[in-house]
Image 1: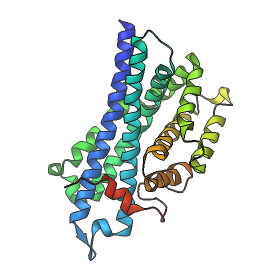
Image 2: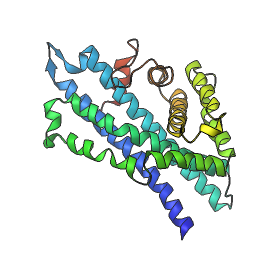
Image 3: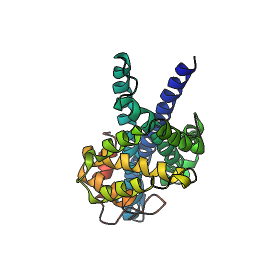
Image 4: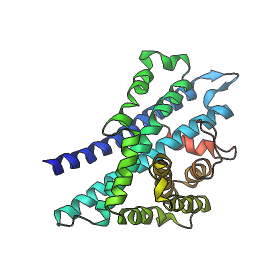
Length: 267
């Protein structure tokens, strides 16, 4: 029964990542829709420079979380195929095991503040129950706690690396599929590898290490699959440090319009 339960836990963690990404998408839809129909200071909100920065940043986070969730989902399909063929330690299995924990930590940690910022875009309208945003904000922290809170998940990443050291090689191989495409991503991966050179302090640095792994994977996925405007803004703000801790701090030269339009609903 224990192996079955462990497999179930893995799937539940995947559910948490997908749920966090879905919540972010819901917040983006509500925020961009409101901003496109609300006037303030003589302009539609979505045309105000600072609001465009906030909205684009929210859209960027949502797209990165979605890309991560989809890649993890594909890993489960690939690992399931290997398992049916009797291969228990394939690259797909190792990547699934490690990347699920990494993704669960990061996407679920990002969801609550994303929900709060999306709610703030609606102002007082977002605070009332009828908007649906309070429910989104209340539910956002659950995924981070469910099936392993931040510390548990971070230590589980280290446990996975200890039991299958090759899993780090497999994880980095996935990330390095984008090698050479963006210097900021390459520099981040180099710094990430250096994080593993001091095993004695690895446990106390576990959260920072897992954060770096998640950002590396998200950056690689966006550089390979997203439009240049999205990938460039992500690498500038998340990997190169040209962004703040709050949403709405993307570099001024980011293509806000393209990023927002890509994430807006069709109607």
